[in-house]
Length: 476
Image (cartoon, rainbow, N blue to C red; front, side, top):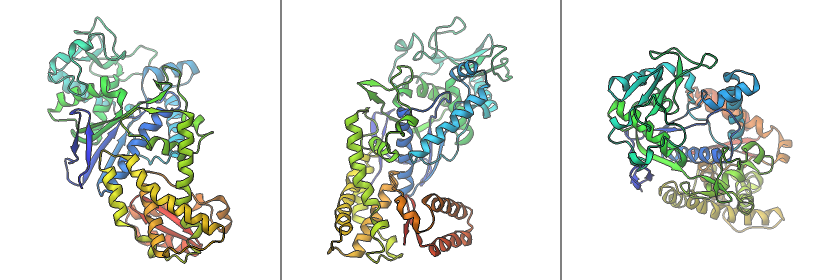
């Protein structure tokens, strides 16, 4: 089976063939850290987290980066309003980002480059563009000359006449620019504003150059997958292409992928429209796994309508899946499951899951396979919970549950053990800390320490179950 990905640039699904076989370089545009994240952000990072998890499950070695924009007019405005430094505002909302997004089981990226840590790399790229005649300095600013890049518009499909009024409100008409649709690579700073010394005077980077420079610095001139929200196609990603490909003469990304927007009453959810709900507020009302499931039930490229009915449906679906995921924790000991048996899965079911997900990360199709397993385990669990007997083969049920845990884990859907089970020994939090320590030991090739942790947990009646999608555990 071949994985195919919809490429925004070609507007077709294409077979996925990374530049280096077996390895994937992946970058997703991160947040500008001046406020709490909202559901639109949650959708984007759940989507790209799931893409990464699936690629890893398929056997690819994935290096995934997501940036933080920690210098921006909005951050500067917020800092002035509160009478604190820009760095304090940025750090506050970076911490808030991790607090919120980790609750949604979004795994950390391999790195989170910050703009302020890459000023020299940004200046180097700007100078390269000037040297190639693609950019020009003007009164302390530096602008990209769009007319000098013939392929401008190839991602968005826009023509130059469509862009005369500026780039989506980010670039206004300015007498210092040679053409109204040129965009800023470097902006001069006022005396009371943050800035860095550069060949063009004290200033700070423009919005678009940041991602181009950080990608080049950390991943190289060409990456495999560049992800982001659909609202970034123009001007941001279009301008990234102009900058990076203008500087290097090579494609910036083989596959441009974009998730659809979240809508409220038919309108895009955004801070500018004032119709957004923060992740933090949502999680006071909705289980994190319900929110993640709500996002994954829709095709990632299509708009996602946030309604009470849709959330209620996701809650019902999660109740079924959660019961299936907890089946082993509840009934594994009663059914005399063995530790060795927990490593076996159902290859035909996994093949059906892969067929669905290979079609441009079709999570709704993948979920259909997962729910078939969960519904059957839930039915049998209800019988056992009420003292009934079942005729199904115990080993087959163990393989069924193991497969469910594995495939749900690929989608980032996991159910912790019920709180009542903590009375039997370690808390869930303590077990997951042991799991993190063991993963660190294995990454460092300290296998004796990893084995020691497994044996220590075993002595406390906790059995670890390693799956391609992560490690879970069985009590008892």
